[in-house]
Each structure stands twice: as structure tokens, then as C-alpha cells.
Length: 65
Image 1 (cartoon, rainbow, N blue to C red):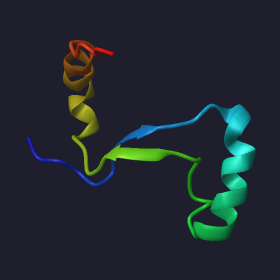
Image 2 (image 1 turned 90 degrees about the horizontal axis):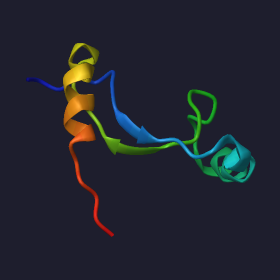
Image 3 (image 1 turned 45 degrees about the vertical axis):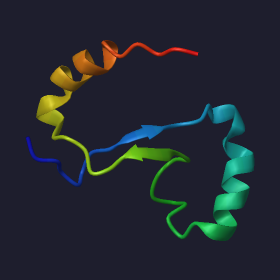
């Protein structure tokens, strides 16, 4: 399965902390107006047509602390 450049896995912080993040982004991020604050984890990613399969696989991951 080939990866595509129009999907990604990202972490989006809660909206109540966007204000402080946006202040920093305004200074350093020329793409501030293109998308919300986020951390990109995986890019490129798989096509949207594969998301149901990927969600199933992600749900099988066991996290340990």
C-alpha cells in the first residue's frame, strides 16, 4: 500500500491552549493561517480509503506506562 501526501496522523492540542501556541506560531510559522496548531506524527500517510483498516490496527495497539 503506497502512502499519499494529502493525509497525515497529527496530534491536535485542546482548543483552550491554542492562544499561547498561536502567539509562538505567529512569530515563527509562515503557515499559521493554513491549519490549526498540531504536531505531525506520520506524513505522508495512507490514503483515506484505507482508514477503516488503519483505525482497526491502531485500536489493537497496547500502550504500557
